[in-house]
Image (cartoon, rainbow, N blue to C red; front, side, top):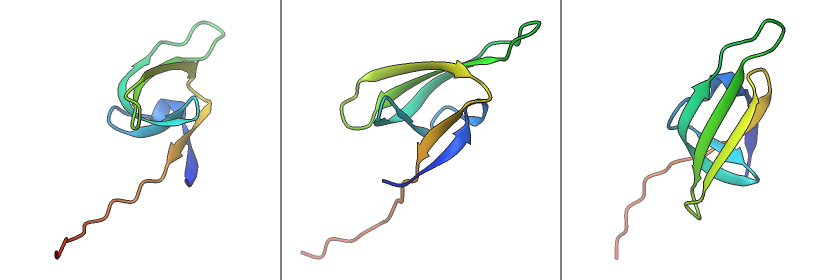
Length: 79
């Protein structure tokens, strides 16, 4: 599986992401405000594509996360 790195603050609902080593579809994204000397935090909730298990990750907004490159193709069954 090929992946690319994307900033955690650029993740949106409906995107695909790798959480805990499994490909997941993002269900919810919450961004907290920055503190006086801190960074914003991003809480990403995702559901596994294969096992339908819910996974949650909390990380700083400037961290990078792995996003799988998914190719979608159409096909026709002849027989």
